[in-house]
Length: 328
Image 1 (cartoon, rainbow, N blue to C red):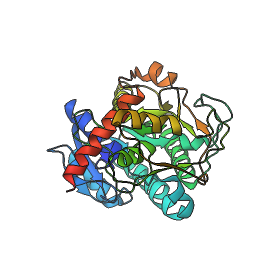
Image 2: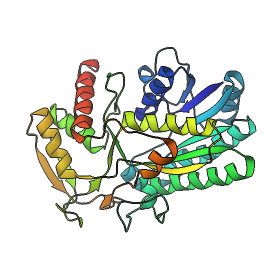
Image 3: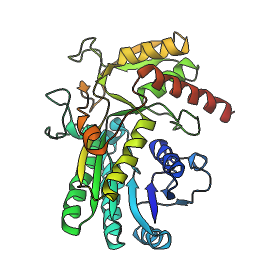
């Protein structure tokens, strides 16, 4: 049997594909390459260029490759962009996911792992935020993911589709072997932006909001290394294959860093004192989001190996340096 990875040419998806291939799994990637890169897909893995909402295409892949599990990464992910273009986000993230889930059920797929987000919590009242916390997204991006969670739960109950929903906190870093990393141009992720500034690819870093109710006034986030996140998906798949119950779990480390702390770490690791400016808050940005991540450890046996901000930054910086030479 094979695993279909949607968005497998993107940042997190490409790490997942390498993880699966190393474990001896048969993998097929579906990606429209809007934000992904064909070269990021592990060697020898079939890459089909198309959309998750293309039901005849997905049905043919399920039948042809004997797909029994889907790991669904494909999505639009920029919060401010979702505020400006909400219908595009609902189409790509929600409508296409509905089509994918339906096709999976009709094709007899047994296991489904969904890439969700801490944005479903909005601005949580209590930290760290638990999976049982109220969901109150502050952006169309968060709502588009929460709608998909709801559809997956209902469809799973009605049709016996086993699923694990993983709510990511702030994903960062790169493959320690430098096979893939965050490669999207004009990315908005803080660590990506700061490493570009350190290498002279950006003139500065903007800090969006210095008046949040946090110790230094800047937003606090729980940063998780992308390789640890990929391992959480492998653990989720193992859990489902062993007959485990469907779950909704946080993926974070359980402690946060402010924007200014991250910037100082990038400066220290890179040895570059780049320019930093302040700017108004962005729409949809909560003050602080930190995971309660004990359930993933307890229920999946997940054991993070790269829980260190300096290590995350070092891997991101090394990947950014590799991209500079690649793009020349």
